[in-house]
Image (cartoon, rainbow, N blue to C red; front, side, top):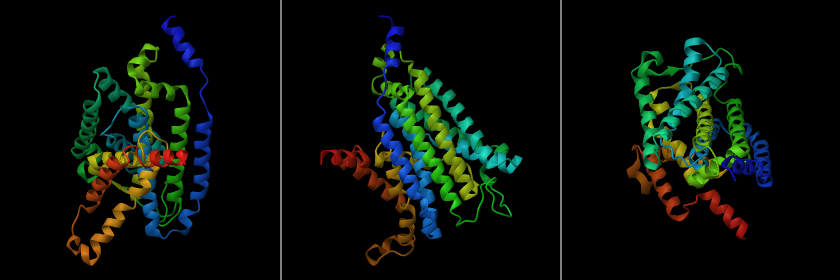
Length: 346
C-alpha cells in the first residue's frame, strides 16, 4: 500500500465527538454562570478576576503549542508582546480601534510563529534547544523595543483616556463589568477553539506528531505543517491576551510585554492545572491569579509570626516556586488530571 493511500485511510476515519461535545457543553454552562460575577464583586476583586482571565487566556495559548503540540516554549512573551504592541501602536500612533489592533496583532503573532517555527524545525531544534530558541526570540523583541524609536523605546505606550465610555475604543470606567465580559468572551472563544482544534483531523494529527513523530511521518502526516499550524494558533490566542492587557491596564512597555516573567505566567497555570488538558490552564489561573494580591496584602500588614516579611518584595515569586515544586512532586500530572482520575475511579 502506498504512503498516499495510507494517509487517505487515516483521514477518512471518523473521530469520536462525544467527549468534545461534553467539553463544549461545560464551556457554555460555565460562561453563562460567570456572566453575573462582576455585578456582585467589589472593584478590587473584579480586578483580580480580570487578571485571572488574562492569565487563563495566556496559558490556554501556551498549552495548545506545548501541551497539545509537544513543543515546549519558554518565549510566549514574544506573541503576547506582539499582540500588545500592535494594539497599542495602532491606537496611539494611528488612532485605530483596539478591536482592529487585536486583529492585526493576531495576524502578526501568527505569522511570526510560523516563520520562527519553520526556522527552528528546519534546523531540527528539539527539547531544551527549541525552548531556548523561543526564549531568545522573546529577548530579541524586548531589546528591539527598548532601543527603537518606532515603538517609543523603554517608555512604552500610555493608552489615551476617552472622554466617554466606548465599546469601539474598548474603554470603560475602571469598575465597569464590561472589561470582565470582554475577557470572559475571549477566554470562552479560546476554549472553544481548543476543543474544535482537538476534535478536528488537524488536531488529531498534531497529537499524533506529539506522541510519536517518526510513526506519524511514516503514515504520511506532514510533521512540520501540523506543528506550524499548532504554533500559529497558540500565538494568535496569546496575542489576544496581550491586546486585552493593554486595553485594561492602559500601559505597556518592553519589560511588561516581552519580559521573561510574561512567559513564566503563561507556563505556570498550565503546569499547575494540568498540561495537555482543556481545563488545566483555567484551574491554574484561578489559583495563581489571586496570589499576587494575597501576598501584597501580607507584605503590607503581616500577622505577628510573619512580621519579618513587612516591606519585603518577591514573596509572590517564592510562593509560585513553592507551589510549583509541591504540584510537581505530589501531582505531576496537574490538578485537573488528578481530580478527573479520582472522579472516574470513585
